[in-house]
Length: 355
Image (cartoon, rainbow, N blue to C red):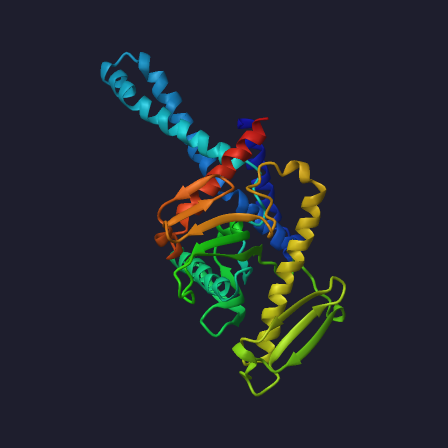
C-alpha cells in the first residue's frame, strides 16, 4: 500500500507542475483533464499526509518507552495506543481511497424519470420519485433544474428530465438507474385494490463541451409550438425545439422554456450526456469481465427496487436491503438506501483489488 501511496503522491506533484506549464494552460481540453485528475487525488493525498504525521508520532512515542525519564515513559504509554488506533483507522480509509474511482463520480448529473407500465398510476409515481430526488438534492446543497417534462392532467409525469449540479452528485445517484416498482392503492382506484406499476430511471454524468464535441453540421434543429397535457397549446410561438443528432439518431425535445434559445441549450445538455453515456457503455461492454464489482448491471430494464406502500417497506434487490421506513425515504431521506449501496460497492471493489 505504501508503494501505491508514494506513486500517487509523485503523480500529484507531476500534475501540480503541469498546471503551471504554458502548454497545458493554453490547451483548454488538456487543462480541464489535468485539473480533474489532480482534484481526484486531493483527498487521498490529504489522508496520506495525515497518516505520515501519525506514523512519525508513533515512532517518536515508541522511542520514549525506554526513556530514562519515568514521566516521559508514562506519557508515551498513555498516548501511543490512541495514535496507533487513529493510524490504523486512516489505513482502512486509504485502502478504500486507493480503489480505482469512477472518473465520473465528481460530476453533476442528468436525471431522467419515465413512467412505465401502470398507466396514470405510473405517471403519479414518477412524480413522487422526482420529488424524492429533488428533496435529497436540496438537502445536500445541490442545485436542481428541470430541463424537459411531459406532465399528465392529474399531476404526474410521463417523463421528466433534470440536471442536478453539485460535487459528487453522480457518485451518490449513479445506483438509481433501473426499474423502480411500486405497489400501492392508486388515488384513482375506487375499490381499494393494490396495483403494481413501474417507473424507469436513468442517471447520466453531465458531459461538458470539452468531453463531447458536437459539430453543428451533425445536427438537425426543428422548432414547433409547445403543448401541455391533453395537447393544448402552451405558447403561441414556435419556441419548442427538437434536436436530432444525425450520426447517432438520438433525438431530444425541449419545450419548457418560452425562449427557443434556452430550449435548444437544454436539449444540447441532454444530448451531450446521452452521447457520453453511449460511449461509456460501448467501452464498458468491451471490458465486461472487469465489471464484477458493479452493483447490478446498470441496465435500465433491470428491476432494482420495490416500494410497497401498504407495508411501508422498501426493498433494494441488488444488495437484499429491506427498510420499513418507506415514508421517510420517499420524502427525501434517500441516504438510508444510498449509503448501504456505496458501502457494498466499496467492499466489493476492495475484494476485487485483493483477488
